Image (cartoon, rainbow, N blue to C red; front, side):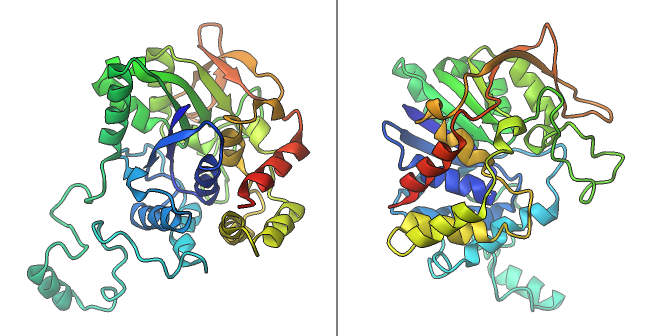
Length: 349
């Protein structure tokens, strides 16, 4: 199975990407980062460092040109910055061909020194006259992979653990590329009245409706477009199921124990330590990724017809509608302990 992994560089998404490299019969063709629950420069740096640490090709990584409707809170996005500093990644250099971010020498400069520095070297890392950073183009990466699949009469699976903006943008421009998509596995949303995750402590209470989930709320119009203009199968992993995959003390203790001899556990343990001040944190994306190899860990999906509210207070809420998009919705684990055991097994290397 050829898989394109699109995520927005939160801690759990990085570990989901690592998990994908261990799954049997999975060919990971692209890792495309959307600047969502992250800061793009440090997120790309962390992705590169992780690829180096696990001895996986760094040329899989690219940056989507997606832009948000509702951006994630800074309190969440900082994790992509901090991840670069964990012990197992801190000494790994960043890609020399990518923008140097952050340039540690720059924050202490006066305005006059900054202007002088810019005049000496406009490419130093402050591209004020450029519209996009010089990272590999994620939109083009997805187009190329889908075009190749179409040309070879093959299909790829999309695992998206972030908003659907990249997918919408690419298919809006080139709708024929949908023929190269086998299925979409999407971690997003909350259904059947389940609580969303818009925190009124990080958003004004007049905006934080109780049923929206961030991957939907970030760009509800992209969701509406994909629902209304495509017909490939969609399997949804909403908060209904992913909220059960909590990062427990027992799970962390097992990761720590394995860390002495397993690099992947070392990376996962140090990464998840950054989330300890976020008691709501779960393995949302690792849950969705594990489905590719172990669907037996989950109860059979519920077949629902879903639509999305795009405007007003309930913006970003998925609702059941008779004329909505047919979606397979995974609502429950069949074997939650088996899920933890499987993740630990795969990371024990």
